[in-house]
Length: 360
Ligand code: PEP
Ligand code: MN
Image (cartoon, rainbow, N blue to C red; front, top):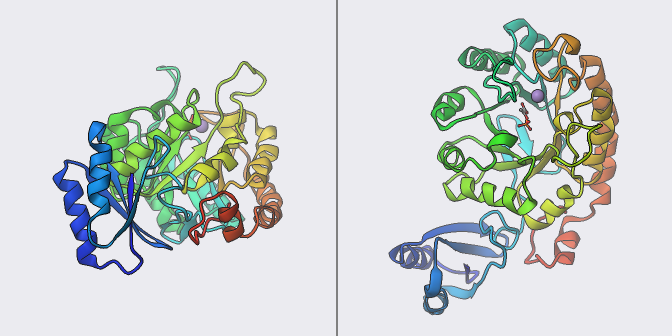
């Protein structure tokens, strides 16, 4: 449930409500939205729910107490009607601009990373990607350069000015990855690794949570809820394809998930057509599709010589192909912004009004 405070509620009244909630062993999360302060009551309420709701409703400064109908709370649009906007260095994600995350699947060497970083930065990428710790299906495949790659990524950030994103695979790596990277990526295989989700919830770095390849949208949002309820509100969702019976593509990119997520949650949504399709020539059409249905950005793999890549050789783009992709996506993104309409009208049509600023 969440407690909606009166528009003119004082700080002392907000604190009074929060201390009541804490006194019940629950955690209060407050959000200052366009219609004032809303406080979510998070925790295992059990049978005390209606009694506590009635008590909170009588406190000074409280307008009303409302149940949250979805199992996910803090990531829901009900609690937080306007879009979350995440800023990392000069990159802004979720504000209606086009986020382009690009770089190699794996950091293979300093030269390979720098060559790719220079090329994608010049072509208009806003964030540099590169795997340091690689989750490989085979234990005999290249596992990544680890901390050495993290150092190269930090140097590439200095060189290009682009923030860097890289995957963290286990709780013991969280601190070191957070020391070097600007955004932590949780890979598909770890979407339901709850101890890892809690740990990245405690660091001051945005997290990009990739969809588990066998996860429903609700399971994915519950995973995001783990991170946000652990204290980190800066979560980005990434649709990277799910496993179906189809074998011509590596995965099946769930485009419907993009507008669905914008309906259910305030978190930004990125699409990854590289891992979704597994095929270089399918990356561009699916990137276009993702932006057309309203994604906030795209993550793609780029390598100076894809055929020689140590991982995911078949799906990485050449720098030229990335330039071509950018040239195609910029106007598609402009068109999509128009298509997804006026933010306030869209929010009202979804019944999540309250003067929200949602663009979807
Ligand atoms: C990646 O982006 O490097 C990666 C391994 O992706 P996924 O977790 O989606 O397979
Ligand atoms: Mn890859």
